[in-house]
Length: 281
Ligand code: AMP
Picture 1 (cartoon, rainbow, N blue to C red):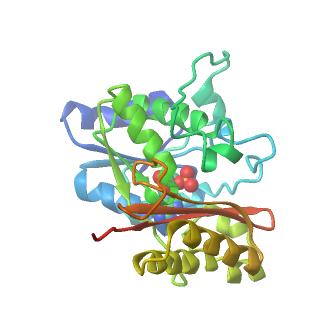
Picture 2 (picture 1 turned 135 degrees about the vertical axis):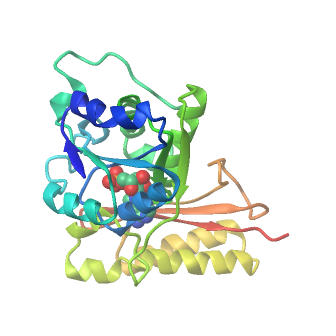
């Protein structure tokens, strides 16, 4: 496994694969890798000849009061884990390498699906994601790019601009990896105190209860209200509890497949999760 820190180095490492028309798989991450990330790499290995994982904490997707400075950076540990799952190339550029020294005047804004859910509390977040992912796509030029359903809205945004801008690759979504107690794995789980970590699986438990209630016929609005109340009673500060179609359209009732979304804070740590609920007419 090679680690490259420059765009030139990455190109040089990829050129034999490109010349041989090999399938290149790409997994963008911010590092501090866990099983969720490693699952994306495993999926990439199944479909592709060469797998590139980027590790880059992208400053332009963090708000001014967010955790850019304190975000965990664990490159050596990440390299060990990636070598174990058969990653071929790690791309770990500096901020200067990614953004250069000239001002950036171009933005990528996906309207319609970025204004609510996580976009509401994190203005500009998805623009920052779209810009960095597009830059990385242009650097790696993968055949397939892999993203987790944990960040469901992000996955929808990426699918949308890839389609809108004819970016020549296929986006693959990978299901959420969870801890044994159900908590969706996240680099930010490391911020939780032991007390909050013990409480955190309540999100998934209450999502499962909500799904069961929906399937038993409870009205969608009631289910969402119960879900928010359960989390508040348990000690979470709820940011949002929402239901959307798989394409993120607003829906009023459970008359089609639905995705339930939660974002809630425990102390300073913001956790997100979602659960897809099938409609069986
Ligand atoms: P991040 O490092 O948080 O930017 O995540 C990099 C990629 O890993 C994104 O596509 C995430 O959706 C994905 N990811 C993070 N956590 C999980 C998880 N628990 N299950 C599946 N995918 C995940």
